[in-house]
Image 1 (spheres, rainbow, N blue to C red):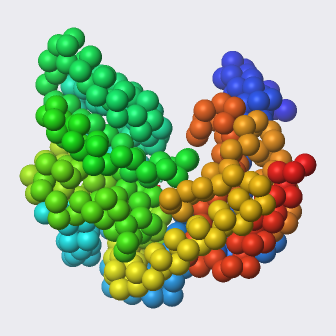
Image 2: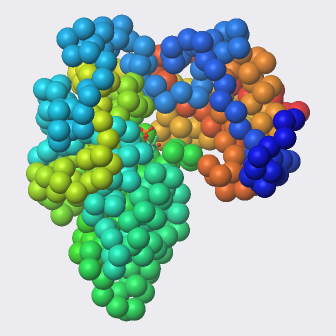
Length: 400
Ligand SMILES: *Cc1c(COP(=O)(O)O)cnc(C)c1O
């Protein structure tokens, strides 16, 4: 090893990494050498891809790719400016209109990623002296948004409406707040379960709190036609007091592209355009990403059979596993199989990869210590044979 000019700095990194490695928590990116479809190539090996969020196979759909290419030919690769300077293309405005229509809201706004959307929305709505009620299993981007906002963060037990109500009342008794917010994933990213949206809306509104939902894993997946959590609960055309006030999502999962978005009333969108720092201080999404997402959205609307196929695949995969004695159940495309021990989960994922099944071993800090799991993400483009092979490999890997 070369001698460092900053021995303390290097020791800090080496010791930190050694500690992570010792706990079986060291992570390294693995390079895929193919598009993120139902099948892929990893390390020169053909695999059934069971870990991608490309739920509807749209990230490698040729119509979506063509839309991206055409957008590059016309608008170039980079936008060269933020949305409020020179970066807004007509493509951005057209997609925002389409998203608002899709989610039955007045307006929508794009962000560069779902992560930036969550951070940018929450910090624009809450600050010091405010209070945010946040589900214990919310996504890291929501947690980071809450922390950056400097509001009081009150974490309620996962999907536990009695605990949320108790904590709202308790906080109320302790003194008034300026603004507040209730925020929840609608589909939880590590467990694949669904938030109790109608109860959340009722409870939040009864206490004068707006409700924000994260539809990242809901868009394109739940609801009869994949329109997300509101369609799932038949709330799309319900009176405003029964609906969430703010719905964010991402273009990077079922919509096969890159970027985040938020849907809501016009005044919310105008407020975010003027105050949300992650919206204001970053170069606008490139034309290719916007055009790809818009084409994917059009296909999702025109081909609801993709959503139905995904639903059938989830049911089939779980039923094969259940028949084989492995507990698996999910109302969404995320099917977790809890293993517990971190190292065991990693070994199971490795054994599956050897059998040609690419699946993620999810460990701390993505989930609590001791609740490591295999996390399957299914896709509408998996066929029955893929699912049967994957299920057989899981049963074999877990029986060791
Ligand atoms: C993936 C995800 C995000 C972040 O979206 P990106 O577009 O990947 O940055 C936010 N929330 C949830 C629940 C997610 O799963």
